[in-house]
Amino acid sequence: MNEAAKPPILRIDGLTKHFGGLTAVDGVTLEFAPGRLHAVIGPNGAGKTTLFNLISGFLPSDEGRVFFAGQEITRLAPHKISRLGISRTLQVKSVFNQLSVADNLWITAQAKRGVWNPFRRTASYRESCEKVERVLEQLDLTALADRQAGTLSHGDIALLEIGMAIAAEPKLLLLDEPICGMSPAETARTVTKIRELAQTIDIVLIEHDMEVVFEIADDITVMAQGAILACGSPKEIAADERVREAYLGRPEDEDYVEEAVRA
Ligand SMILES: Nc1ncnc2c1ncn2[C@@H]1O[C@H](COP(=O)(O)OP(=O)(O)OP(=O)(O)O)[C@@H](O)[C@H]1O
Ligand SMILES: [Mg+2]
Image (cartoon, rainbow, N blue to C red):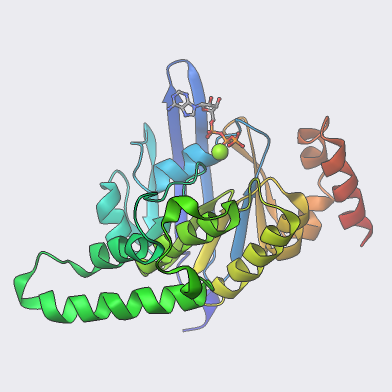
């Protein structure tokens, strides 16, 4: 089956979330095609993280439905959604600081394998060991396997968090501002890794760094005030007047959008 014939990896229909009088996600309807790297951008408070929380089951929606590869996942528990193949990272980095890098990966690798089945225990143990090794290599963390996670640099913690997400062998990976607070060198390294991962896993990336977004995204969705403002290719988004208006007051981004339009 070619990509065009496959169902969207994610389809969201009328998704809404209220916090008291605030509508954080407001009737969002969208589709993410498989095999592409999607970015979700938008000003602070636009509802991007809340959208991820609704997709991954961390928060219950008030209205609307979510379909993952054609299967409805609306209001399923987070662990069930994770088992079906959606992993996510959090905006605030969260690893087990006291544990080694390898043990952090081990936890999510084992969670996927169903450690509680006694008949699968030996095979499961071996498979998880191999999985941890593979993820360490994939993210260039092998040399840090025995280091306590709490002693890692900011960039390595972010890579470890991505590693924990992919150790669960997702089909879809939701990354919430993975490069936030990184040095330029750490950013370059992480962007390279995200690009590599996107060859085999569908990725939706929330990101504020416009340079990174316009460099790596195949498709961009712009949110503002809980709703979808625009969807399109980087070129289409850069040329969209409504998007420029949403970013007024952030001169660094306006400049970047100007450059992207001229390119
Ligand atoms: N648990 C919550 N309880 C109450 N209000 C919330 C909660 N989570 C988010 N909000 C509010 O919902 C709105 C959307 O927040 P959200 O975190 O989704 O925005 P965001 O687009 O991810 O912003 P940022 O770019 O700053 O991360 C904001 O006004 C926020 O204050
Ligand atoms: Mg957020």
